[in-house]
Image (tube, rainbow, N blue to C red; front, top):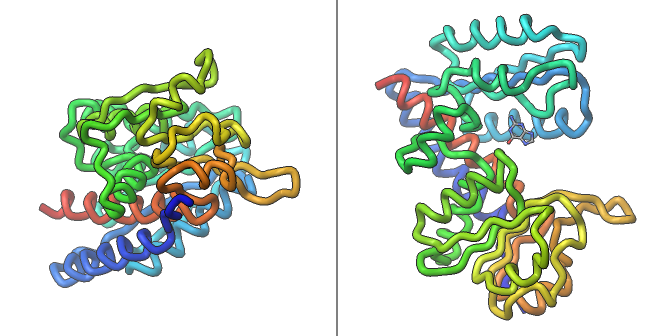
Length: 282
Ligand code: GUN
C-alpha cells in the first residue's frame, strides 16, 4: 500500500515556519499584508478566500478583503489594483479567479505589480520561473515541490509526467520539476494513448480536473502520485483525478483529496506574502 502524503501536516509545519518569519519581520517594523480581491459571489471562491484569511490570521499576516459586486466594471477593478499597487502597507495582491465573464482577467493580472503578485501569474514572474531566478513561485506547483522535498523524494533523474497544461498548475509544475533536474513530459486532454506516458512516470502529477482519469493500470508500480485536482464524485464527495483506492495499491506514495495538495497551496501563498514583504522592505 502506498504511503499517504499528509498535506495537512506538511502545510502546518510550513505555516509554523512562516509565522516565525512574520514575527521577525514585525520585530523589524514591517507588518506583512495581503490584499485579496473577490468579484461576485461564486460560493467556491468565497470558501477559498475565507480559507486564505484564516491562514493569514494563523501566521500573523494582516489581510484586507475587497469584496466587489458581480457587476463591477473593468475600470473600477483596475483602479482598485492601482490603489493597492501604490499602497506601501500592502505587500501582496491576489485577485481570486475566475472573474465574471464580462471582465478581462489577463488585463487584470497584468496590472498587478510583479513584486506584489503573490500568485506569480504576471508574465514577468512566469518569465522568471522559466529562467529559474524567481522569488515568487506559483503556489500550487511550489506546494507540490515542498511536499516532495519533505518526503525526501527528489525529482532528479526521475521521469516526471504532468497531466494538465494550465497556466496555474500544469505549465509551471513542469518548469519547477525541470529546474529540479527531473525529465519532464507534459500530457493533456488531447494526448492520445495517455496511459503509454503515465506508465513511464516515476512521479505522476495529475492536474486535469476529471475524476476517474487515472486508473491503477496507468500507474507504474512504485510510482509517486500527486493529485492536484479537486472534483466531486457521484455522491458529492471530494475526489481527485486518480482512482485513489486502486492507485494506492500500486503507487509507493500518494496524496489524498482532500488533505493533500490543497493545504500546501495556501501555505505557499503565505510564504510568498512574506517573501514579497521582505523584498519590499529591503
Ligand atoms: N482560483 C483558483 N485557484 C486560484 C489561485 O491559485 N489563485 C487565484 N488568484 N485564484 C484562484
